[in-house]
Length: 201
Image (tube, rainbow, N blue to C red):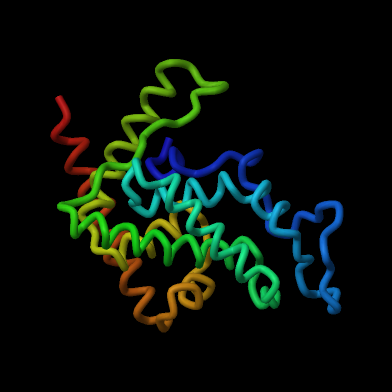
């Protein structure tokens, strides 16, 4: 299994932003995504936002607070959601900004804690679950060596599977800059993971 596969949500977890829920407000244009109530958005996307905070390096002990803060922003801003991106992308943008704030607080307190490597072992053998936990630990170690911008680019592209133009719009940089960050991040991750594997007994 590839290292990034261990962090990717399963199909059942990854609820598409275009899911229509009972009682959704539908925008005037048929091409614009239906907008859920806050309660619906919270129920559907809570796990997604939690995973985003973890992958983006929020201190484990602070994830609950970070998710709470993100949904406070969602509560205030959801009535103004215009459907210019998918709801999932919009939510990820909020999570990204909140995660940045929390990482900065952690740095002022003396550093970041490793990502929680708790991955559900449902449907896996003990050996497979152990391999996944090890993959998460190694990837976290390597990602922690990247600066903030490159880590975000790698997580969004390689773990969340977003395309580069979408990420560029989300993090508000031009395409060339983002391609450069992503290239450096991919090279670093690949090289360091290979070295760490070779060093294992």
